[in-house]
Image (cartoon, rainbow, N blue to C red; front, side, top):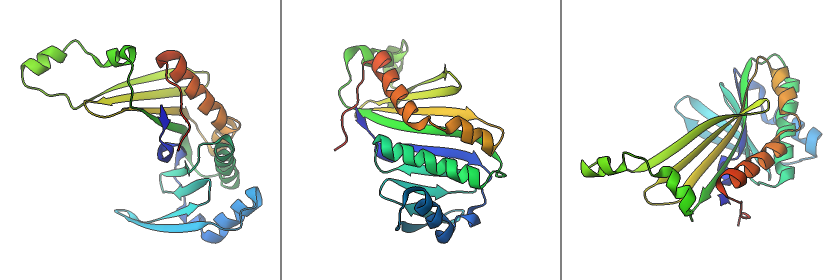
Length: 211
């Protein structure tokens, strides 16, 4: 099982004032927290206007009106811990931002599907579909599980041709930025370990190192 690094992130849903995230303000926070002197800016045109991305070697900050995303560029524990600390710092600096939820997300792909795992995708209607000319393109299994205070949303998608796609979302509904800050603190690396443990214990999947 290989990590899909571009889909590892921390997302905070809320009503964000993106004007606050100027290069000066964001750079000041990065320097104060991690001693980072330089960051890269990227401007992306979207249907809703221009979106700004602030990138470091370890993560990218993507502020949006309805959600704040810190996307990992590396999957090591320090990068994940830094991403968490950055989100916590922003929540602490902007405590009056209406925040409704946050999630810590991981993604993987598995090319070699073992027989017991492949059996999960053999549904009782497969023969009937084939008999009537319906050709399956892909099948997803979605589970929502309680894990202590978090809700673990696990989605396994298996296309007819290609690798198994796995997405894990550790989700929290919250009433305020302060609650999100306290619930997130110290959990990002832990959720990585919890997610890997879940996939190994339930599905027999272990993570290979990213190339």
